[in-house]
Structures are given as C-alpha cells and as structure tokens.
Image (cartoon, rainbow over all chains, first blue to last red; front, side, top):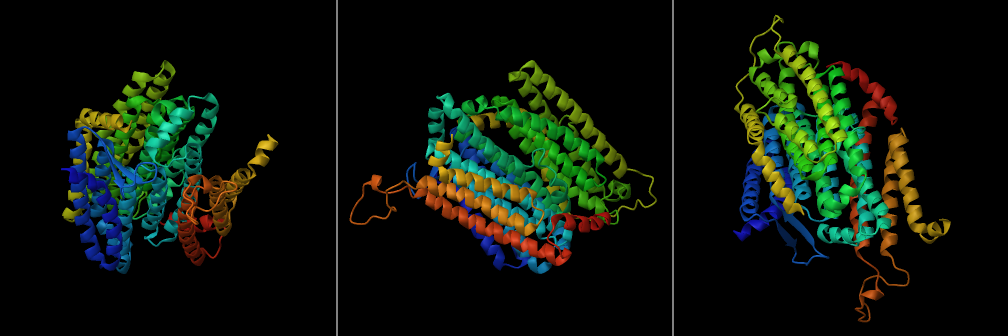
Amino acid sequence: MDFIVNFPLFTIVLSLFSGVLCMMLSGKNARRYTIVYECILIVLVSCVLWYTYTTGAAFTYVMGEFPAPWGNEIRAGVLEASIALLFLIVMLCSVLAGTHFLIDDIDESKLNLYFTLINLMTAALMAMTWTNDIFTGYVFLEILTLTSCGILIVREIGRTTLAAVRYMILNLMGSGLFLLGTVLLYDITGNLLMVPMQARIAELSQNPQNMMIITMSVGILTIGLSIKSGLFPFHYWMPDTYGWATPASGSILSSLVSKCYIFLLIKIYYRVVGIEVFEKMPIRYILLVLGMCGIVFGSVSAIRAGNINRMVAFSSAAQIGYIYMGIGIGGTAGYTAAIFHIMAHAVTKSQLFLTTPRLSEVSDRSLKFKNLRGSGIRDKNAGFFFLIASMSMIGIPIFAGFASKLLFGMAAAENGNSVLIAAVMLVLAASSVLNALYFIRTLLRIYDVSPSDLRVRHTRRPAYNAPMLILTGANLALGLASWFFAGLIGQGLSMFM
Amino acid sequence: MLETLLANYEEAVAVILFGIGLAMLLFQRNLIKKLIGMNIMDSGTFLFLASMGYIEGRDAPIIVDGVTDPSKYINPVPAGLVLTGIVVSVSVTAIMLALTVRLYKRYHTLQLDDIYLLSRHQMEDR
C-alpha cells in the first residue's frame, strides 16, 4: 500500500517522458498513446485519492531524501487528488471529443506535436496540483503558460496567432508579478517550502508592523495569478483565445488552465500565508468586489456577443468571477463553494466548447447566431449536450451549476454580515437571470424549426459521444451528490492546514 | 526615507527596473519593445534576488582550504533561483519572438494596433 505514495511523482515524471516520446511517434500513434496514458494516470490518481480518503491523512513525499529546509517536496491530500482526477478526466474527454476537429485544424505531420504539448501540459497541471514548494509552482506555471500558448497556435490562422500574442503578453505580466511575489515572500521567510514558510509568516504576523510587507507580497502574487486566470478587469483576452482555438484546446484552456492557477492561489493562501493571517488582509474584499463585477460584466458581454463561441467565452469570465467571489466570502464554506465551482465549471464549460463547433459544422461552418438556426435539430447529439450544459450553467436543479450556486448562497449566509449576504444573493439572482437570458435565447435559436434545411446530418461518432456522456455523467454526479463532494472538499481543506 | 532607499539601493533599483519593464509590457504598442520590456522586468526580479543572496564580505559557497563554517559563505539558493528564472525567461522570450515573426510574416507590421485592425476583416468571415 505504501507504494502509492510514489504515484504523484510518477504522474509528473511519466508525463514529461511521454511528451518526449510523442515527438517521435506518428500523429495517430501519439493520439492512441496519449489516450491510453491518460487512462493510466486516472487509475494512478484514483489510487492516491482512495488512499488519502481511507487513511484520512495527507502524505508528503520528500524527493531525493533531502529533509525539509533543503529538499523539494510533493504533497497529496484528498483535495489535491480530487482536483488532479478531475483535471485528468476533463483532459481525456476534451482530447477524445476534439480529435475530429484536430484533424481538420492541424496539419497531419504536426499532429504528434500537439500530443507532445498535451502531455507536457498534463505534467505541469499535475506538478502545480501536487507541489509543496512555491518555486516549483512558479517553474511549472511557466511551463503551463508556454504549452497553453502552444496548443492555441497549432491552428494556423492569423487570428489565433494574434490571440496567442495577447494571451502571452498578459500571462507574462502575470508570471512576472507572481515571481516577484514569490521572491518577496522568500525574502521575508527565508524558505521556499510551504510548511516552514507558513510557520515563519505566522510568527511574523504577530507584529502589526510586518503585516504591511506580507500583505504587499501576497497582493502582488494575487494580482499575478488573477491576471493569468482572467479575473475582471483582465478578462478581455478570453473571447479571442477560447473562441479561435481548436475546440479541444478551447475546452482545455477554459476549463483546466485557468482553474489550475486559481487552485494554486487557494493553496498558497492556505499553505503559505495561512488562512487565519490571510483572512485579516484586505485582499479578500478586493477579490470579492472584482469577482462580483466579473459576474455581472461577463454576463452582460455574453448577452451582447454576436457569435456563440464569444458568448460561451464571456460566460467563462463570469464563472471565474464566481470562484473569486467564493474566495472573497472566505471561511471553509466559501472556499468549499469556490472549489466546488472549479469542478462544476470544468465539466460544464468543456462540454459547451466541444458542442459549439459541431453546431457550427452543420451551419456552413458559421458561429454566428443568425446562421445557427435549427442547428440543434440538424445535429441532434450536439444539440442535446448543449442543452444539458446550458441547463447546468443557468442553475437548474439536479445539475452541478445549481449545487454550486446553492453552496455560494449558503457560504454567504453562514459567515457573512448582512451587507455581504444581500450583495451575494443579489449578484447570484442577477447572474442567474442574465445566464438564463442568453442561454435560453441561444437554445431557442438552435432549436428553431423555421429554417428550410432541417435534414439530420450528424454522423455516428462514438469517439465524440462517449466522452460527452462521461462529462454529462460527471455533471449530474456533482449536482446530485453535491453534499458528498462538498464534504470531500471540506475534508481536503482541513488536511490543507 | 532617502537613507533607507540609499542603504538598499540595489533593491530600489530592482523595483524601479521591474516597474519600467511592466509599464513597457503594458503600454508599448510595438511587439519587440514589449518583449524588451518583459526582459527588463525579469532582470529586475533577478537583480532583487541576487542582491538579497549576497552578504558583504563573504565568499562564494565553494569549499576551499577546508573552511566548512557556513557563516563564511553567501547564501547559494537565490543564485540557483536566478539561474532557473533566466532559463524560463529565455524560453519565454524565444517563443514570443517566434510568434512575432509569424505575425510579421502575415501582417507585415509589428504594431499591435495595426495588426488588430488588419485581422478584423478576417473575423467578419465567420
């Protein structure tokens, strides 16, 4: 059983190795290899989740047997394992369902390089989830940035290159600020491992004079990661980036990459700064306000969008706002809601980004609303999956979106003052109405029976339907057993201390 | 105030460099200048790290003449971090330059505003 403690390291090292291996394989073989490999990773991470869940304790893996202040560490608890498992499942489903479009969008000879990037990205996602060392976090954060730029530009049209440049410029700014924040924290604490850093910060925060410099460092770090994850007002790169990427990339970028940055941020708040010290800082109120603004402005932009992909991308900006609102509400309930929303949004948004290209495919490859009329009838499967994901986004009960909204409301009611409760409830209500407005409008359009051409054109594609069913199942599971997942996250957060 | 700044002039310079770089990355419209700004920003951080690791009057942490007392040497970790940071910065610059070349080949300009205008008509297609 103790052999399982090696698995987190395996997920990182084997992914790096697979990246190199895929470079040498042909496109088709690289795809096959990646799919099998992702399945193996899912098994490995499931073992870790089972192990930490049954033992009820997190474990630390010391690399190279160097003890605490010098070595590098990996840490696995229930929360890390469940987030890693979710990332891998969504990654596998995106790659499976997106393959058909990949072959259209990418030159055959370069297909293996796409899977190289996917494997390197998996390594970065895994490392950022497991790491117990803030500088390792920085290094893999840069690898994640580079690979996400890579999977964006594989589709060689001018728009994606431009989108990639804008994406990279903002991301580089974010990385620079994150590095500065990390360096400042290292400077204050003299450590890069999370546990000794937290001990030192707890000691220093006793003196109010030190609070300013700690707040400033954490603030710089927060700005860096919030730019990278697309918090309002840094969300304007989203529509171009997500909308023009090949569908598999759009789905991965919106549902995994931006979430991974937020997870790292939560991890830093809990494990580096210490949640008691962080709750004293004004940063969380700023995040609360920006998150709320993001929800409203993202939804309004989504209503104004004239193209289905831009609409879905802007709604991502709103969903990122939700997660930051959870961090702003604070307390275990707030963080539970935020992390639950990371999961709910990852399964929903990937499904949306994988259905819109199929709807456009049966509408003369147009993404504009006026051309999409009746597309849900022409391609029944894509229409159905879009319907499911839309209902989750609006917040219809039994779907994940409803459960996360409920958790946000409960978190606000549990530990907020009356102004906070009123504000959160108001934003939740407004956002549900706005979400309903643009998703129902879209649904009415894609199920419009007036166009003359309503021939059913979808072809049987098990490679598309199976992963979409898995995502739908995950969505329903999160919605129906939300109490179980909220408990799991709560247990994970208590292990974070 | 001024005395504190003068005493820590390396850190002050590092932060000023970081600010210059960040401003260039944000406000310059020319892609190459943006990249130069990014490099200045990173250099600022590296200077900050390196100056923090250096302790006046101590040697590089390489054992010569059998002196193993740690108080005789400077802290080697920041230097290691700077090296890692430089590697990251170089690879990011390389990929950004490659993207810039690709954009230049397509649009024949390096001004981001012009490129954006030129790409607008492509967007109308779909």
